Length: 243
Image 1 (tube, rainbow, N blue to C red):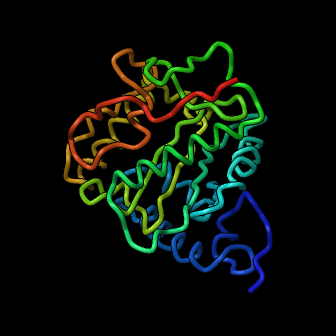
Image 2 (cartoon, rainbow, N blue to C red):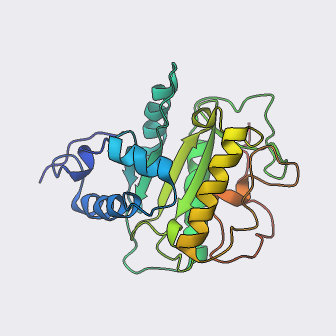
Image 3 (cartoon, helix red, strand yellow):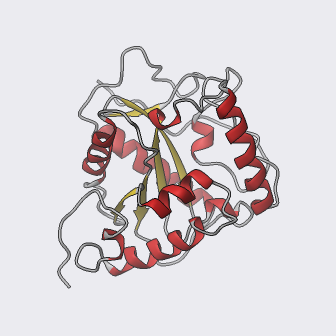
């Protein structure tokens, strides 16, 4: 069946065989079933999925070229308030055989690096370029975005296994207004979600999980957490592109 070329996708698109390939329909169906389970820990995500507020894109194993356009289009949803809590979920074509977590972690950072290399806008001058700075955040199109990886190799942290695809979640920082790390609403919301995550995963909150602006914290370590309770060691794989 001929698939139309559309970059940023809606809930309806994700089950339409004239818009997306068969593997996308299959993986989206799994994703939808998981995040709309009434016990799913992230109720913001659950609500957004049920109301059709999320957006989606997909890339194949060999071709990531439509991702910058998808993120650009997604960011236009935040040009003017009110900022609905939209999230973008990017599905990567599944591997022929499932691999280990390190494989998916490397692929995640390679995709994010490629996206950065194809950013038409400059990184904001007043924002750190070094991921080891506690105020570093990923930027694209001039916007700070929290990005997190989900992969089929997660065995203990079940909240990060959303099907056979590596799935990248993009959340512009604008959607967290009023829910920042030091705001009362943010503290309460995070605590509730983390309690639910611990119950689902049957594991304590990962030690690298904190809030943006915490001087003892590196934001990049939250992007692709371990399947355990061990802090992530070493340097961030992300490199700021040469000017």
